[in-house]
Length: 148
Image (cartoon, rainbow, N blue to C red):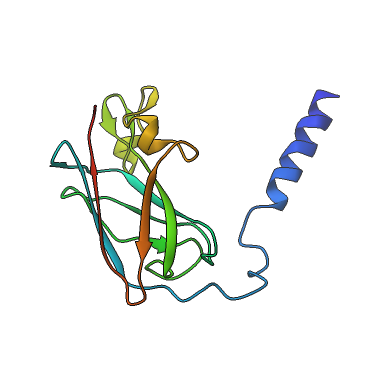
């Protein structure tokens, strides 16, 4: 019985994976956006910055990961680099494993418990008060975070 339930759960989870059908309507045009994140006036590396459309803003979430200098270039999920013009709620996460940022390569995947290093006022999608307005033509965004 348990195996049947496990098999059904596996099949059900695979149905949603793997590309699937293209979006029913095209994604909105993106504007070129670059950004910088600092924590206590120091560049924040290894953070994932996510833009969630608010109000009348059209589109899907856009996100980018900060490099060693705290810089990032967001990209539409399943889409082009940049962010459509509009207003966004922003949340920034920086998970640590063994006290170090998790990287995309295998070296950041080894051992330890994963913990969020940023306060919920930045990292929690429902609690973050960070916002950004992307004008037509795009431009830079800057997030100055504090640990207190």
